[in-house]
Amino acid sequence: MRGRMPALHTVMKHPFPAEAVPLLLDWYRTNARPLPWRENRDAYRVLVSEVMLQQTRAEAVRPYFARFLAALPTVSALAEADGDTLLKLWEGLGYYSRVRNMQKAAKLVVEKYGGDFPREEKALKALPGIGEYTAGAILSIAYGLPVPAVDGNVFRVLSRLSENPTDISEPAYRNYLAEKLRAAYPRDGAGCSDFTQSLMELGALVCTPRSPSCAKCPLNGLCRAAAHGTQTRYPVLPEKKEKRKERVFVFLLETPRGIAVRRRETGVLKGMDEFPSHVVKGEETPEEVLKAWGVSAFTVVRSKNYTHIFTHIRWDMTCFYVRAEIVPFPTYSLEEIERDVSLPTAFRQCEEILFLLA
Picture 1 (cartoon, rainbow, N blue to C red):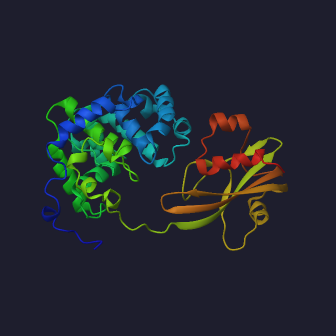
Picture 2: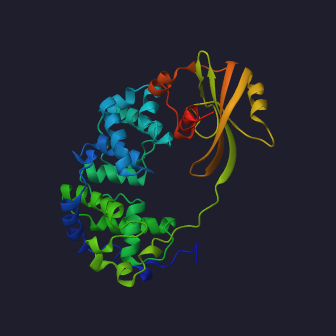
Picture 3: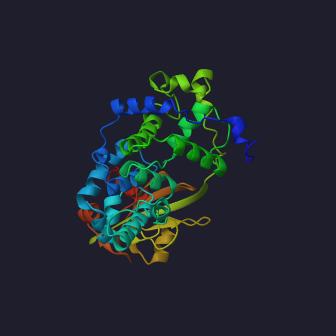
């Protein structure tokens, strides 16, 4: 029954048996992908990669990581970066609060700790944007400490190994798994670093959400779900809540001086640049919105519909390509927008309307 916590000791005594550790480490050291953030164990590189990897696949992160580290190679450089540069470097990754919090953390690391990330779990988790998982990743990967980094991949591995029916959103269950996993960590620094990364790698490459490659898994002989053919039942996930829907107009306003861009002041993506947008109320028309803004001498040329999904909101969007003489917003050339303006993907998609046939 959802919402009730089963007696954990009756459900699972060994979420990660001791004999699994050497099997997993041997597999990882032979099969680990040569990812750029694994080139060394620098804490700053671990932080940047782990924040980028939230909600994003490793292969997609590669070019962003390279670009970010080339521009901001140290925690001090991140702390000193101006906001527009930071957002431009992050453009396309989404969840922009992550990079803002990462910069806040960098400033504290420089000001309070002389540029070295603290090695105490409590102090590290006190930094903005650094929770249990990211702290565990930094402490184990960079500093070789036996502190688990338990994300969705790791929860999936542990739940399948033990065939545990507990909803993984249950805080007590998550704490239980982290506690048991902490006890399984190797005692040497390199082992701790590899162990954390091996669990991540196993979940990403082998113990995948759908169609796991059990025949290739080094833990196949220890996995209860594999033995019983129940892999796809685990982990047990909470019921999904329906996303709130909003209808949104986006305007690509082209003037003789350039294309209009403004800074969002409220709501989702607050503080980000956008092509002017408007959450539609009732039966509003695009012409009414434009006139209310003070846009004049305009022609709506064409439109394009698309959808953008946030964590809790679905935007059903219509982008309008509009030629206008007067707009109350700053304007930029296409070259300036590409080079200097940080547009979230929700708005960047609207550029495609320029290349549609009239």
